[in-house]
Length: 490
Ligand code: AMP
Image (cartoon, rainbow, N blue to C red; front, side, top):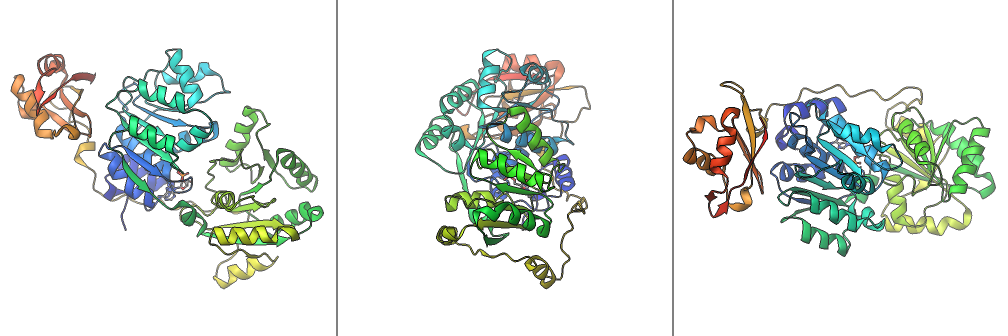
């Protein structure tokens, strides 16, 4: 099995992963990370729960240079929830490297987001807010060469595609683009065709992947008894964290109230709540301060909550896809989860249809089934009071790629220069060094840390002569391609 170190990640990132308790890359990470590190465009067909955020996020952190204060990378998301979630993940991945990440989404004061933008290297934003910031000239994408579209199909569904096109058109054409989407409807294919460069397709079968680790139960109950039965199930199951899905917004409020009346502490989440209170609930739940969330599908869309041990379908989902999507929120990578579906007698056939389509088995829940199952595995049931122990940080293995090493600073300061050609132009590091050495008085030793990516390259030269290098080499021709140079930092 592959390790993160073998994928080519640098030490600060490996340390961050060890700290998070990620031990092995997931399939999408294993496939996408090397491609993205090499500067290629990637189309990842993957849902929440597959580890897609780290698949694009780890190479993004590797790509960004924390010593440069420009926006170097942009992640576009369809919703504020996803925006906040991706931001939290990227901050964790980039913590040791000191990368500054700002979340920009609507419904929150734009001023503080603008203030944060000034020192940010990475912007994670919803489509609408990013458009807004661009039109106010507060967000410039001229140096943004790593762009991610996360959950592109949701952006399409929400009618954001025209804006997505506009945003992409403002980033340099030589940028690297990663697109992640659970499905690939024709407009997404068309966008990829138009706005991406020979993207590498990567696909993982998420549905299978996520529900394999979930133990699934059903419980037949009349509508009237539902709240009582749910309270009993929760008491018996003692989840660390649970999401209870209800079909309608009114239903969410009603159930949250009736659980509260039974002394169960619970938070509601649905689309009629103000965005501020939705954020509050989400953050409290993600942070583990709330144990129980009652939500509609839409409100909980794309929500990944890694601590979730239980999903309860208070109302039976109206399709197998929704079922898989809901219960995929538990049993995440390397952990197991439990899903319990309440059905009325007339919903039995719907349950069977779900079993058939999702190719899964749902067994009847029983009050002491949990204990029996746990004992048969030789394990104690997890007490709700005992938080899951943090996995011990692992010492990351060696292997970091030379191209991630910082330029040596001996012999004076170095300036970082971007060169407009890359592997797709048939360029190798020696060509870049040659172009500079041939046209200046520098020798090969002075030209450091050359990184040739797919469509552009980076090189370091002594800061004192950076302008001279640019003026002498800019416009020259290598392997039939015209070189354009620009100093990024000095
Ligand atoms: P995502 O599909 O990006 O929403 O990620 C799903 C969940 O899996 C998140 O809670 C991540 O923190 C977690 N995760 C992602 N990659 C790994 C990994 N390699 N090992 C363990 N957990 C992971």
